[in-house]
Length: 322
Ligand code: A3P
Image (tube, rainbow, N blue to C red):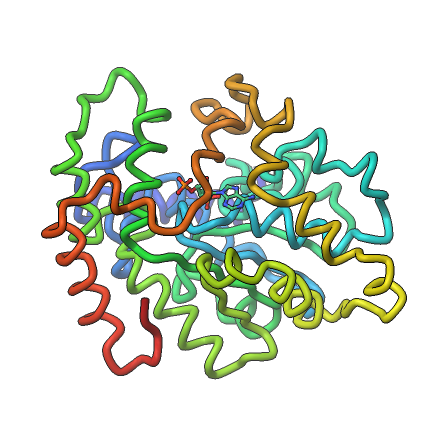
């Protein structure tokens, strides 16, 4: 193993025990690092990226999200947009491959020796990666060079989505977490890459400062006008749809291909089998309802009000709202 990577590991081993700890959702605990709650593995990923991802290119694209805000969907849409001249819609890779296996997870793919596990370095440049890391934990060289798409979502729906996801993937050997306890953790920001509000604000500010390199979208808006956003994404990514493509209905084909109804009903995404890369998560876990406002079926009015109040307080004066 390269000596410079050993240095990062050493740093990780030294920092880890000094960090505040709280309860984890999918692991025993989360640690708080520079204001954000991370799984230790994600902290390691962040350190490795900071120390060793030294040569980002302007053509590299990173899809950033807080967990459960719509990364699966955006991975699919962006993959389909970027690669629309490579595949036809009848034999498209998205029909047989889960979006998570087509768009590698940045901080998860850094291996212990610091190299990327197989698939990332075999990807053609420009890289298209997905990440949950907060803007402030990424190296400046990267945030000032690559293009970012960020999707956020109403925290009430995120919490409900996350609660269901946790019930599917929380290791059985860990004690269960009740709905109320999960709500308390989430409200305090103790959830992966949380607080979700600070996470969103970091990218929101970046998008305001540099709209040509950071595109900020909301799940609710993409849901309402998907084809409008497919065009906006293509424009942002520097591959706008031509008049010919418009005539051929390519935008609508992409929207249909990536729709919740289509993706969630594909054989590959119905499988409950886990993969080596995601030992505790099945492809099917990434698809639940895919709707806006499902929180009404799960949160008490007091809970909803509490999250809305936090959202209002945190976003006050930023221009961002839900
Ligand atoms: P719900 O649990 O509310 O249904 P992520 O992909 O970031 O993990 O987020 C998961 C959420 O996105 C889940 O929300 C999931 O159902 C929803 N989702 C997955 N694929 C989608 C799609 N193609 N269109 C809309 N929503 C989708």
